[in-house]
Length: 335
Image (tube, rainbow, N blue to C red):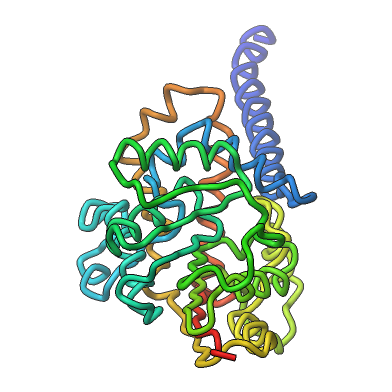
């Protein structure tokens, strides 16, 4: 009888131990996923991170040539664009092209500005699209801290037959260009990585010609006051330190920086959270529907999992108003 009791208890004990082991492993996993692991450290951090992402090619596979959010109209959203079941209602890559077109239209720039600067160009998706849109009379120059991004951007321009787009490795906080060089300065989702937002704005204004247009699209934290709650500060810290962001500011802060140069007129802002928020989960669902590029490369499984968690945390932060999608534009005064 005693032996029978022991045999009966053994599976229960094994199941209990296995359950406790799984719970412990899950708690360790959650703790690690909740701990940001890629903080901004110095001026080389962003270049290194984007070099790695460019080499892995996973980001390019899912996000295409445009490493920025997409644009969704109310009609797109009403049809379920960006959701799991509506993932194919609007193509994720198409949404990014739409964003470039909408940002260009919102900027109010000239129809064919002779010289354009793309600050933080990534692998040059927007640069090439602008070059093709503006035509051969326009030369678009993209700058990035990542040598691998610049090389990939140049190769894509060659492959696509776009000779009026060129790319350079350059620090946006200390550009090599002379004053008053460009007719149109474009900055799409690069301000997030800048450790000195004031210098970032000052340099873009410096190289902009009098009468030229500056347009910025960037992830922003909400305005303060009211002060951030302890929970909000924890969430912001994660968003700063997982994707190499020194810090965020509000889009009203950006407007003040533009005005503070004493060279910009007609400064305007807008909040495009509604038009862009679907991108966060759309990028996740795109991977759910097409997982093989990740499954066939075990070395990047865990990094991809961390990125999925961060995408969802970004979506929630924008959803509750902790983050906002800021649009800022202005014209450089003639004197």
